[in-house]
Image (tube, rainbow, N blue to C red):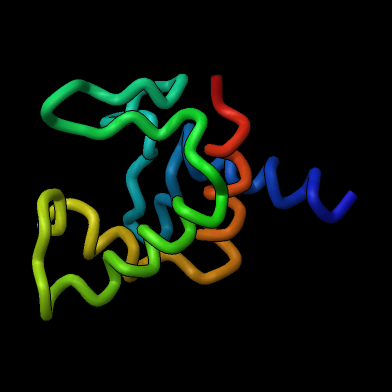
Length: 96
């Protein structure tokens, strides 16, 4: 049940964000099914959970070495707990 709860938390964050933390819904930019918007917001669906988790954690430290999308993602990643990042990664891995 633990994994199911993790995925459900990830789905909630992906679809609705976390208003109290000013975290927008991921679906707003990356689309509800994770397809993204070519050349603007990368596709997320089908990415391995470990990769997504690492990328979100890396965005926390991008102030030192900015990369594409750092402006949007660094503040968001800094507002997410490790548990929330893990939940998002678990949910995104299952997107089709």
